[in-house]
Length: 336
Image 1 (tube, rainbow, N blue to C red):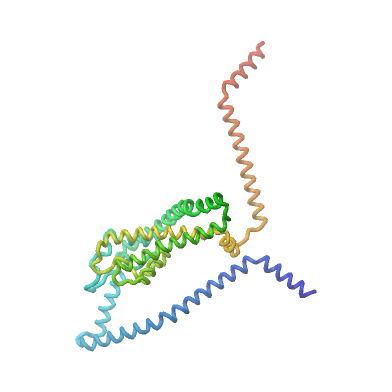
Image 2: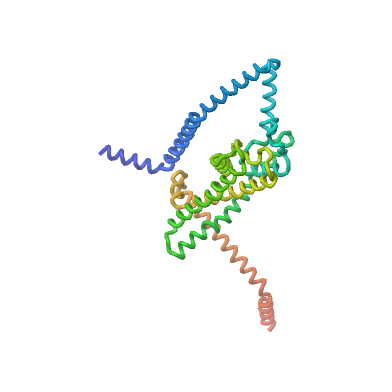
């Protein structure tokens, strides 16, 4: 008897705080996923880093042995300056791109990466004025970009997602949930094909030292706004039509970001995902719901009374002749 009562009380306690339990498991799962990623990246990349470090030490030792007139301190000062310039997108190599990093097309590409929060990091402002302007430009531009993307995605979603799903549901009588799932899968497949596979094939042809995997990696890193900066198109030696190429990449990034947001919005509108998300949200109390209902009723009642009063005033203003006749008639009756 006591065990059954304890079990029922535990069940009631879990059901009462179900959202908090689900949120706790969500946080725990996210932390475990972070640890899992760190373990995998460390186990995969650490051996390659160790081999690269050993190779660089050997090259440095061999170079100092072949050039005894140069001290290790002088070499390290030179390499430090070269690496510092490389971090700003300037290279001293003879086979490096001879184009400027801050011509109009490159600056346009940089502005698009800043506003979309991709930020490859291959080109950064050199001067203090450029850094200050970048801060101000981003503070204004990033919310402006979010507003712009939200408006565009809302309009595109109506024509691409909601109307087709409603058409097949009303016209052919299919289940709305099933049509929405099939439509979301098809839309995701088309988006991946048009903005990942096809551009990856194009980049693997246009970029001399990129294979298909590296090109696909660039497309994913860019459109997911991760922007690591290890692969940046249009930076090769003697790149043909570099200005036009940079403008095309800017348009590709903007259209691809819009397409990704449309697909994400389409999947978020699925009934199953809405139910799944609600598991982790804080549920509103009944008292709060009642307060909202009362406030809504009061607002609606006050608006109705205001509308009625305004209608009466309009009627009085629109009927001056009747009021004048009635007053004149009453004055005449009094005189008689």
